[in-house]
Length: 329
Image 1 (tube, helix red, strand yellow):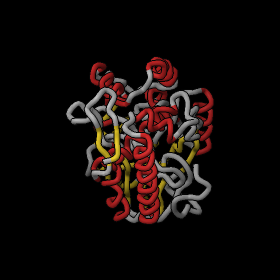
Image 2 (image 1 turned 90 degrees about the vertical axis):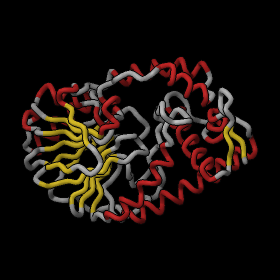
Image 3 (image 1 turned 180 degrees about the vertical axis):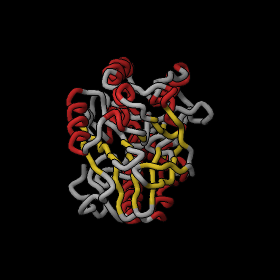
Image 4 (image 1 turned 180 degrees about the horizontal axis):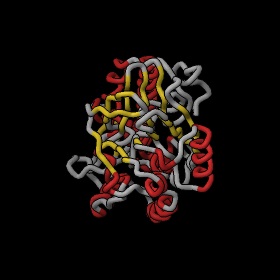
């Protein structure tokens, strides 16, 4: 994480919400789990199914005077394991309804994807075989830290919906970028932003499959940047994110993120100019030489996201080879 925040941090939380940080095994650190304790009692992003997280979550509810069985609903901002892994555990102990964006249903329910299509997309990135063999092992380790709520308990949200939570009415914002169906909730001067807006780091533009796209995948970072002005226009007084402290001044954060992505795109353009034609994997090893394990995928998504920006600007070209080779235009 950077030494300085990307925007102004909030000094205190609104009276209507309570926070507990739940541990994760990932470099991003703990995930923020938010509780709106008025009816309907609502939990946002209940962390992962690991013993320490369960213990901390139970102690948190006890201090808040809320029993697990009293939880009315759980909002899952997106289908990444650190945000929804405890869902099934809550479902077993309550009658709660679980909400997520329509585009996240497959991740949360662990529906399989077209393996041939996935193999083609991965091949286009140029990932070596030894790394590909390690990916299923890593995924199985993560699956062991997830309990799913079940399809009969899951309700899907669309952009523009509204929902009651914690005694307030919230507008639903479904915006792609970090995740295809990422949900943020706004109510007056309050915004629950999940991982879409973060105060200390820029959200990773995750690689997501899309069989209808010419690239075989979504252009996650391009999509993400198109959403930012919407949130700047909301101008909430307080933003409660998925990681890091609460913050203020969304317009300033948006400017910081646009500047960051411009600098990174220019840096990657320089790498392409020096090392291209090259695959995404080769470029990522120049950009992030020290990444290992599953973190290699985070580096790949950062590079491919900025290559998409450069491609849209006409600054790079992409071959149809397998793997795709990128070069300066």
